[in-house]
Image (cartoon, rainbow, N blue to C red; front, side, top):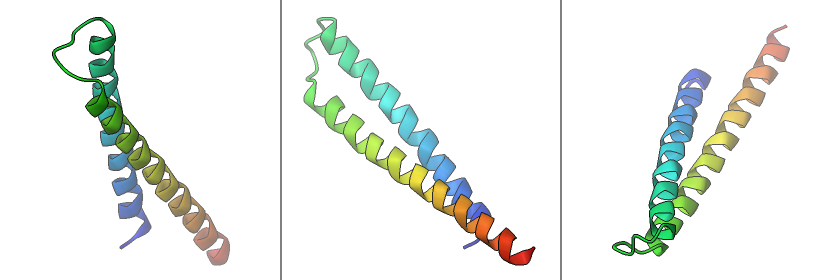
Length: 76
């Protein structure tokens, strides 16, 4: 696997987890506004899971960036 594909996968992870966080936040705000048709637990759990995916993807992106920098330093 090359560094470019790792960067792409981490960006996909960041994007999809961000979308899930926004979706969960909207569900939580509906409950806070008085819509009791759905519970608050599931959106909170989903938000926490999405945050972990986001953090992991960001760490992968950071590591790929450092690796690329090291490769460039070695090549120079």
